[in-house]
Image (cartoon, rainbow, N blue to C red; front, side, top):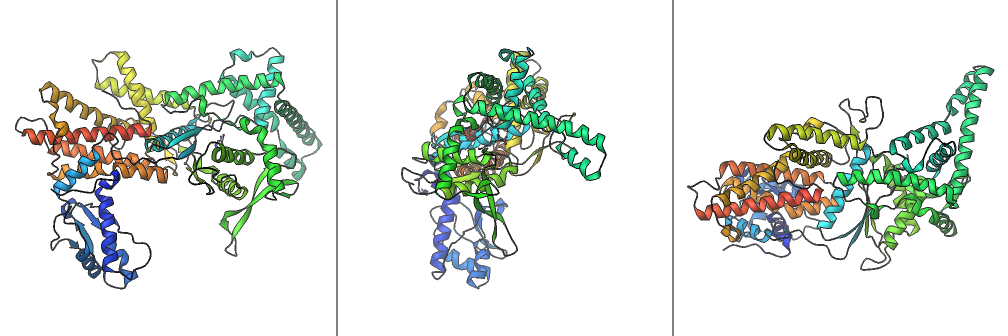
Length: 636
Ligand code: ARG
């Protein structure tokens, strides 16, 4: 029987094997060819031509200086595929020089056997630690729609790494320090002193209102003052605006004083800060839990946890001449991403200390990189953060590299610079194409969004299961609604903006969470029916027999699974997993329509082969969804 090499596991993927064989054949056919060779092997779009196709001949034509068909012939002459593929025929080279490959059914079956293990062929990475920066909410504010993406994408990436056996440390870089937080802390203390507020019964709603008011007080009409001066609007207008600005200056001074008290750990000030902290975090962590995102208290490493490190860190940068003075501030110069007229990258300043002595967002992120790489032992740090912070991360990564804070200190990669990736995501838009807001123009609270998705899911579940007790409908709707919401977010190209659409996300058709969960429920019901019919479980050791075209297509899709996990881990793009699972579910639907499993006229061996294929499909769908952070349902 034909067989494919079985180790390492992912090498059971015919795509990987064919790619390697093509590279070998190209090297043998063109020994003088230097440099990288891309075999350009893909699953054939048109299954009638074959299972796979290579476009290598077209890619090489220019480099070799021969017509592609001639190159294709030379490659085919050197290709050694007799163990896994049908012999070449006169249709094997098509069009300008495509090479078509049809796998032997037995080879495909052997690949499926190799895949059908508890680990589903996912290669395990030994001895690695990755930090995932996830959630990143700010104190005194509700988690809003923007945080959905950081929580859901960050957690899905973390789970993908965990699926590869990597040690993952989630870090929730909460904005819990600095002047804005001091502002609201001061405001709260004043309210408390005036007897208008009891910190013990503080709600996040109330807190958010106080925050906004404190902010307004600090931001009073500075722009207005300039306008009055510029347009000479007269002494009355000037006096009015100046008074407002004076209030703002006073509020600022007050906030600065509160910050100093926070920094010196003044007990009364810290107590109020802690009340704000607890109030925010208990809400936020509850939202994460409801979203089935593994973001817990242990993951919290807010900006405040770096407060004591910033002074020494900046001193270190100054002593080693990495930071320098610029207009009274301290900056680390880095090469930016944009180039100037001379074609050279424009030098950018990464600000680490303001002229008033205050530290910045970037200073804290430098300290965070140092801790993550040099204390927590990360060889890679991944940031699930809004794309609008791209420049910040670019600068911080470069500054950290220059300063040596990203240098790995121990283990096999000691001395190397840790890989730092900004997994940037786009903005969630409303149907009008503008950032998704409430009618009154506020940012949409994450809790409200979850609730609405669950309500929509409930309507679906209720209409499909009229007999079901209401409590069970609600239980299912909770899982389904959250799955729909998360899947809608994850299935969109990460860096792009996307339009938020409740009706689309809860639909049972198309590339949606409910469609995939439903595919799984259907597979489970096949096994329920099988046991009702008294079919024994001999199928577990059955021979796979992917003979029908739909069976082959499904088998080929399943075999891609380990590779997709690797791709997601490498590109940090969960939408690849979503697209893949949708392909699998669609291939399964076509298979199930064309290939009866439990009908009476199906032979026992065919039935068992198909049951085993159903089981493998179900386990891959389930594993993929769980890896995205979406728990499957028993029924819906
Ligand atoms: N709190 C930040 C914000 O709201 C996000 C934190 C992202 N993580 C980081 N390490 N900077 O913009």
